[in-house]
Length: 487
Image 1 (cartoon, rainbow, N blue to C red):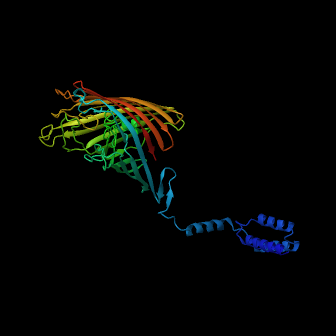
Image 2 (cartoon, rainbow, N blue to C red; image 1 turned 90 degrees about the vertical axis):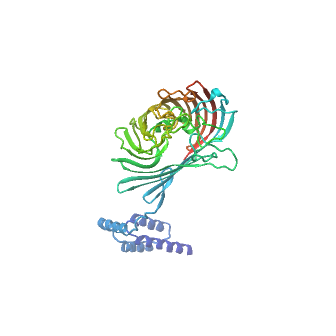
Image 3 (tube, rainbow, N blue to C red; image 1 turned 135 degrees about the vertical axis):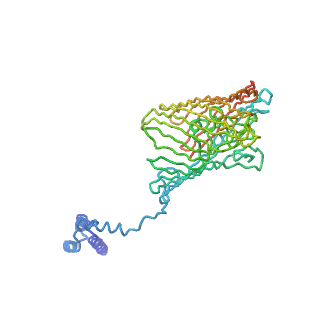
């Protein structure tokens, strides 16, 4: 009897509570079903059942009219506290958070390789000034970075008054200890108690809209030669070492052996919106010196005018299911190379214009990819912008180069790649310079296995040859194996 009375008390209490709820929360059919079940189980007598039915009918308010509901909802919204502008939420993808109206994202890359190098011996007939095939007394090994150092980037993205705004900071630390003479990627220092460098090569701001395009201000990758290095498969590996006994924080990959390094440069650049697959860019850049890289060239270092770079890019419009993708590009760089004093290659105030053009194409057909690239210029130089671009007398040297590359991916994870590239530096009119590099060329082959969405395992072989105008030649064979991770 006590248990029955306790159940009756609980049931009556619950029913009373339900009956007092607004009509949108307490459904009449649900309450009626509950009363009927309590009656059927003998918990309620017929008299108690009738009394509760009558009580429910009296206490349950009629449902409010739709207008009243809408008014109450509007009042609730108005009374609710405004959203916290400093609320922190995770981003939908990647590593980052939304901090109020600002997206903060973190990204980066880490790599490391075991590299075994077999250089040509030190001998008079192996001397090539400006050559990129290493020479040495013996074979050597290292644990080092590849063409990329490490990378840690922070990007802030927001929209203000209709403008899309991005602030980007990119730090590039290396594995290997460096001398520090010439920057974070200076010559290696393979001895104890040394330290690596951090190359703070990116810091830029972009402001734009979908209709006006984008303006970039700061330090970032250039236009000329940009697509050449970004599509080079040795970018994620080692390629040619540039020296392996005491490695710097980067190898060469195919820099100077198929293209001139684009570099990360101070700039103000405008890029148009995309029209039918086309975009165009033009910018003013920090002017650079004509640099005597080989020891066989002249220097020019006056900077009266900015460097100009411009380019056009085309991407074939496709959808996600398309098996064919294609990209075409062309760029130009030009700068006045002027003498600052009589000690330089030309009389003070005299100048020569350095100009380079590049062009390329990439085609993806299902799991196959083909890349073809070429460049040409006068006083452009080789390896780096305006490196060895003029003779000791200040006369322009012509240069050109190219590379071709093919890759195929099996089962979406395993990629085989191969490429050949060459960079050529001519002599100035009337110049005789038998030790100056004439060509740097290499064959490279590599395999990549996608272990996870972040981690790729890499192995490579590269054969590099440097040839001088007088016939000297040096050769280098490199084997590398390691891993690279992007997040």
